[in-house]
Length: 577
Ligand code: WT7
Image 1 (tube, protein in one colour):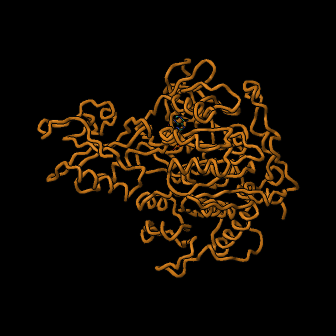
Image 2 (spheres, rainbow, N blue to C red):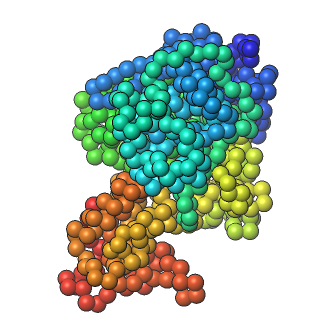
Image 3 (cartoon, rainbow, N blue to C red):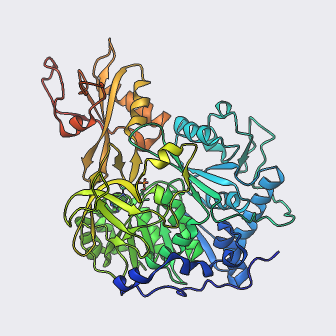
């Protein structure tokens, strides 16, 4: 069955001329996007089809969809090739009984296999759970257990970190590399060629679950944010409006698909718009990043302030390269004006800030390519989005007054649910408003300025870290009696994770012990959650009534009991990072 007649999706078609932002904002309605998708006629949809198969049907099969670079290694994949691969992998999963709605987790590094696995799972109607490649045992366990994942696609090396025996719902594991697996011969290898029979695409409803990203809150374990196929409406449109993607763009989003930026804007938005994406494997390295920009000819680049700040320190290398960049965007943490100035001076481009969250599925507040940038501001809501700064009761506050950044309910890419946690889902809303948890103010022209979080959440290098998760891990270490974790301002990373610890009886503060505690968190949870700084205290500040730890006091350095009898008499924290 062919569900579409011909492509209705042409570059720029249906796009609004956003140089008249006010006018478009008044008129725009999300329904106007619908005719551009196949489901408009059939009522049935599939993100993987819209991202890949559609382009092959429309005659773009030989277009390069993905350029992969790792060190000096470079390979490319066409849309036809990705269609074939996702069909094969999808067929394999389907033929082994994986059904619509099953949770298929993908734990792979930034490599084409990861992109193929994510789309293959989506193609057969499963809910895909991509995991960040730096996650360690406990972070993996928390997510897969909560989600009752039945399938895992991973590689030989990363499989070592998966606590397979503790995951009762896990039925099969697929290995993407060629090495003979020592523990389970029955594990199918995806590298084998399979002959595909029948239709692989599972046609689903717009509101059917598609992808789940776990994200931290200030309390409790990470929560599963479930998104439905309908996110494509907004991801497609912001791909045009905000990323400004055109037919011949080479686009690089530096985030791993385990984070929402790496899926929404690392996979879906660019491929819905038929752009060529760049995937860079390996760790951050300034020189290598400059090489990626040059050798793949990146024209549109989406990254984060921490990365820009790290590159700023290597600015002297820039004159050695020749870049094709024409548009740069940023997300995840405050974009300081200093970074914008650097972009203008060294790359000849303004960096465009964008604001959104895991829960929102797509960009909401942005600096449009054509609009004036006010450094320090995240920009304005895209057409179709109403944002406001409100007080606790839901009343809009005056311009320049600090309040809660809130979004009027009902945008297409809004999360479908919090996995198995309806109460948490409802806690995001006050009346018609979705409450972001960010504090901000708005000027008379509607530009929004981020001022901080309204809770204890930490944002280090653009990654959201819940203090509770780190604290829970810390107290599992035998030397730790109590722990409190905060974000401490940092020039490069925005914030770093800092832990205040009360030692158990018999332990003494030494640099070795601090290192050991850091390694413990890094190995059990994840490198990004590791406290880069540890300070030992005699006692943690707590509320009188409930005895809850006062993280705010630690942030503001109030009522902190550092003891009076420390040997070196020092009160300052010891940076061990
Ligand atoms: C939180 C969401 C989906 C984007 C990646 C992070 C912070 C996000 C900005 C920005 C200042 C920002 C907010 C937000 N944040 N973008 N442009 N300026 N802060 O997604 O992990 O769900 O985190 O990141 O605090 O609430 P996330």
